[in-house]
Length: 232
Ligand code: FES
Image (cartoon, rainbow, N blue to C red; front, side, top):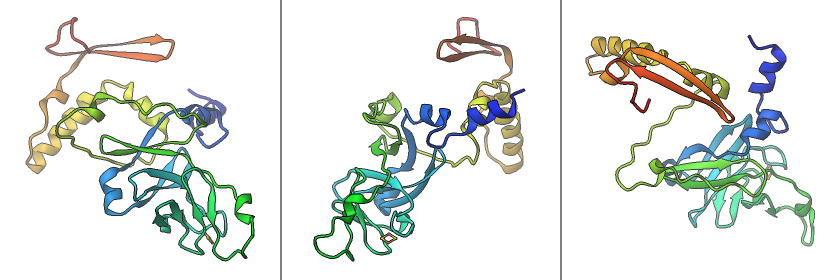
């Protein structure tokens, strides 16, 4: 059982927290590229931060803190222009690097925009998804996993899970839930609602094992009908 302190250390991911610093070294999918083709601005929440991702007319993407530093209007109501995103409330304009480019109500010659600080991350499209990186520069290369770069038809689904990253990862090292939740329960739903449940998830676990190594855990499972030589 984790102590409250240990639990907080693992689950708090805001800026400046230990896990927040670690998790800010990775890219995360935050939007579907096609959604930003239909409307180029989207509010997202990532690692405890409220942000806005947008697609520029040149096809590049930006990600910025949601609150405008002027009077905290949401940049989810921003106007996308060639150089960045303009706040819908009084027109302050920000580029992808976090510079404030324009403050329409400032008198000519004012340099007030140079004193404005705004947080921006990096955003890139790959395989039909828009990924964001909120960590320090230089950003690592967005991994070219096969599923993102292979030719052919790509089927993209998404779901927002309102829970901590730890719950998802903890669930991933619980092999037996697959045969019950994805197997038996899905089969029950299929019977009641008239569709065919995939049989692969219904196979019983004959053996499970875990090997700890320096970067985490290798999870092993042997399902009924498999031999010890199976990849799993
Ligand atoms: S609140 Fe954004 S420009 Fe005023």
